[in-house]
Image (cartoon, rainbow, N blue to C red):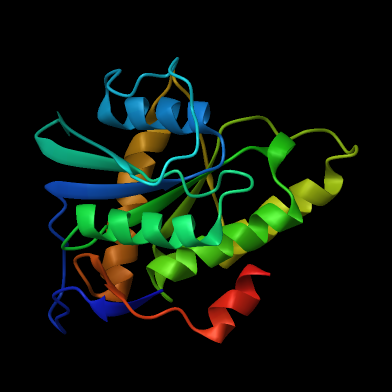
Length: 215
């Protein structure tokens, strides 16, 4: 499990240094995660056609966009039937790779494939990084809002997680990348609001409460 510490917190904090931006992607659809990562980096660095399977280690790829270094982490933590122990190890691996700490989590969701169980799993995984991780999370949807149908309850689950992450979300688009610059703007806004330059995640032993959250 992880807790949060202030990353270079200062009462005089004005504008965060985002010249070396660290972004952690959280999402259950591997193909969509890679599409988002490639668009963030501005080039096809993640193989979007490669088979996607459960694995403990995180993908980490860096690039430069308009003078800004960006590192994207894709830790594969929301796959169905992924064992709890491997999720915990995956979080620790991602924490180590993203040191001194990630700036923002981008939650990559699809309206047609997100249930209430998925929402609980997202909450669990983010809390493993930090109790404050939800405050550092931007929701990005990669499909269209479905009409009222069998997906209504899943839509409600997505709307609920959007509210928990501060409200509002971005819509992914490979042609018009305005959402990418809005993501940078919101990241800066989050860091300024929290008066820290990045989120520091410190590991601690798993407690009985964590086991109950998982169930």
